[in-house]
Length: 399
Image 1 (cartoon, rainbow, N blue to C red):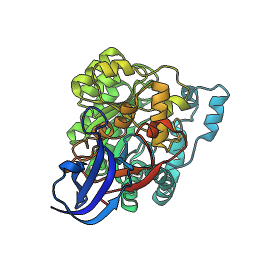
Image 2: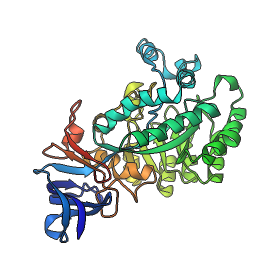
Image 3: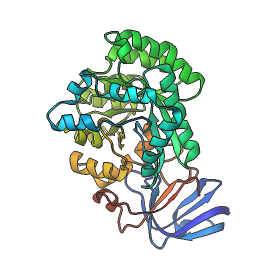
């Protein structure tokens, strides 16, 4: 059987199955950018490779997936970080004109090239840690022109780097100043003007919203989700981060790919997500950065068999984090996730949170040949270390 590339003498963490799918005598074969075979050398078909790479006993995992980021934006919010250190809450800062609206102003002023230049630095940091797929949300424009600008910039990043970019329209992120005290009118603009334009240009793979007291009510989110469905777009939701508005259950009713944050998720929300098959995306960087004390209900999610994903939530206000490896460590130390759960959270479950589980997230025949090759002795090292990157090589589409 002809193949383009063959990686031999490797130990595999295939992530195919309930655990890590460890294979001690492993090899991976690729043809035309897809995995032809990944498994035990003794069970491999006869292969005729053009190129052979000896991995010298290194570990191979699927390329990592960061399934929740706000990578494209202008400016930073270091001043707000200082205010929080002095005692101000995230909600107080947001209501005083900071928060998302602060980044909105900077992002509206930046041109597309400037947004790309700043985002590339953050994207390159993720790629350097073996990340092969990155979701990028809009949501710092809050008007049609800037939302389109952000999504176009995100798409262009995928042309400039060997990485899969998944884009999400997050027009319902905050109420812009020009719509102060008129949130319903702004939601109308999101549903009737912004979302149709985004769909016409094919700039979004999904639609998101922020369901929270300082964001949008469940009724307003319902309108956004109905509009998304009318344009054939899947949905996801920022839910239960600061309070319990039952957003996760709402998202589940709409067949959401994921509900994200979830610190205040209740048992009814867990049950709804389990029925819908929605992924619980946990964002420990934000939990850490805003010094939250309410833990997401990990045990309840486990008991209900809700898949758990982990992401950086890279954003300028509440999680300026560009290390998915550190996000795994935080998920383990702060949320008490196991090593297996952390690794599944940045591979197969992260793929599911993006609707890409048939395409990536495990080492299986037919899937994209996105690999991360590591200088480690055991998979637990990927979760255990802080501020240390053991990546040996990153393979994207077999190259």
